[in-house]
Structures are given as C-alpha cells and as structure tokens.
Image 1: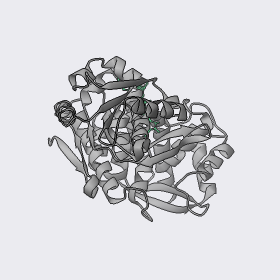
Image 2: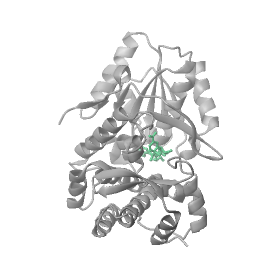
Image 3: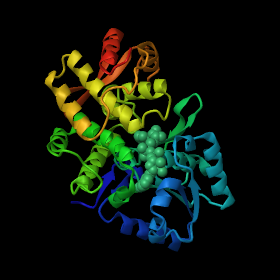
Image 4: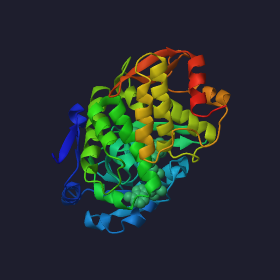
Length: 362
Ligand SMILES: NC(=O)c1ccc[n+]([C@@H]2O[C@H](COP(=O)([O-])OP(=O)(O)OC[C@H]3O[C@@H](n4cnc5c(N)ncnc54)[C@H](O)[C@@H]3O)[C@@H](O)[C@H]2O)c1
C-alpha cells in the first residue's frame, strides 16, 4: 500500500500520509523547529486524554498546546477568540504553523483560526476520529457555528499536510466509530461500487479490522480527487456537491431534532437510506438497492429510521434552507447506480414529503 497520496491543487497541493504518518509528522515538526518556526497545537480534550503521549512522541514537547473541551459547542465564536488570542500571546508570526489534533470539531475550528490569524498561517491536520480521517481533515472546509446555525462562518483553507494514524482509533468510542462508518459507506455509494461490495462482504468493521487502513485510504483518495476537480463547490452539476449524498436529509434531521440529539454520522445514515429511496422514486435505481443499503448501515450499528417521529413540515422547512438548492427549487444528490452519484435538480416537494414518512416522520 502506498504511504501517501496528494490532493492536487497546484501550488497548494498537499500530502495525506498514511502508514508511516507518525514518523512523517515527527520529521515535519523537527524540520519546522530547525527552521526556527514557532508551532502551536490546538487539541481536543478527549483525544489528548485518550493519547497523552502522542504529541510528545510526535515532537511537540516544547510546543504550546491549547486543549479545548470536546463537543460541538467548541466550534464557537468564544473558542475562536480563545484560539486566536492563544496564537497572539505566543507571538506566532506569518512563518508559524498551527496543528489540529482531534476530530472534526477541533479540525474545523483550528483550520479557521489558521485561516484568520495574520490573514492565514500554515495549518496541519492530525485527525483522531474515523469521520475526520475520511472526511473533515481533507478538503479545506473550515469554520465555526453560530447560535443561528451550523457552519455559518468559515473559509476554504487547505492544510499543508494531513497525518492519518489509524491506531489512534483504538480508543474511539464505538458510537463515534459507527458514525464515521456512515461517511465511509457514503463514499462507496457515491463513487466506488467495489468499496460498497467489500463493505457488504464484511459483517462489521471496527478499529481492529485489518482492512481499515486501506478503507480509510480509499475514502481519502475519492475525496482528494473530487476536491481537486471542484475545490470550492462551484461546479454547475456533480462536483464537490456529490460528497453531500444523504446530507440534505441529515442536516434537516439534525436541525429539527436539535443539534446533539443525533451524531452527524447517525443523521447521515438515515439520510443515505432516504437518498436511496429518492433515487428509486426518480427512476434512477432498482427498489432492491434499498435493502442492500439498509443492511450495510444496520450491520455497522447505524440507524435507518428516526428515533422519534419529527414533524414533516419542520423537516421540509429545513430542506428548503439547504445550501444545495438553486432558485428556491429542491436539489439533491441521488444515485444512478450504487457507486455513481449525480445531482438531481427541481425535485418535487411532494416526493420529498413522501420520503420523510419512510423514515418515520409524521
Ligand atoms: N470540514 C469538513 O469538511 C467537515 C466534514 C464533515 C464533518 N465536519 C464537522 O466535523 C464535526 C464532527 O467531527 P467528529 O465526528 O470527528 O466529532 P468530534 O470532533 O466532536 O469528536 C467526537 C468525540 O470523540 C472524541 N475523540 C476524538 N478522537 C478520539 C480518540 N482517538 N479516542 C477517544 N476519543 C476521541 C472527542 O473527544 C469527542 O468527544 C462536526 O462539527 C462537523 O460539522 C466537517
């Protein structure tokens, strides 16, 4: 298996390191030190507690480390303020570098801190959750939440490198691992039917699964390719939007149920089954594919229906606010086949309402 792959973005291209990622990270930290560059780390408390020696092993012993509380609330203006002031207090300058050690929460916050401080300093990702390894650490979407909604403030700011140490997942709680698997399954559904078949052939994947590193790598390779072709999600059809398969439904569920009620990956799992139902209703795939998708989600301990019924009217309102919509018309990512996603324009709202009932909405 190759050790690294590259996200190709001309002068901003960067590597994602896999099998010898810790050694590569230690060597990068050493190189920055030799060049007299200041380094800071923003770490998630849960990741830091689960792996207290990791940052020392990677060479950060003499670095300033800001440990922030775990949880979505950390992606806030308050923690952004704290992070920016932390960099200023330690006199970081334009040559300095910021590392994120944690899941998507810390990655998104630290990335936006790096994008904003001195109009942008170098940024590196050390993801510690499955979701952040296969998704949020790659692609340069950074940001924070406002009380009015998720990810309302942010910037595209690509990391200089991503270091994926799959062993870190050994301590990840099972529910968080499963939530990451929803994104893995999503990649199979949107772009890689052989990955989907491989996942179907294995009952259940956990952090000990021998195939996990190669599965993570395949997901990163899909994301890298999609991002390289449509970095800022401006393609008229297809492009980076395809990575949002199941996400219109998922964001609506998270919004209506209240953030925190479902983990993002759990809402995505329900969204994936609904996106499959939609693809059937649009005449794009066979009805039999629904049971394949349901089986794979269930075997990875993911939900396929709502825990409690949510009002369809509220879910529809949330769908109308989806960023993918164009000129007030519903726009979804659907599948022409498993492994081949497309954008579907002008979806009838009656059809979306019917689909919500399949998830148990009332
Ligand atoms: N930027 C993007 O492209 C992108 C894509 C998808 C999701 N996101 C964002 O990612 C965030 C969710 O990220 P997440 O799912 O990684 O959750 P997270 O960062 O909240 O981490 C989940 C939990 O796992 C704990 N944890 C992390 N690593 C651990 C480890 N190795 N061992 C033990 N515990 C560990 C954390 O302390 C936390 O409690 C959301 O804010 C979402 O908006 C961003």
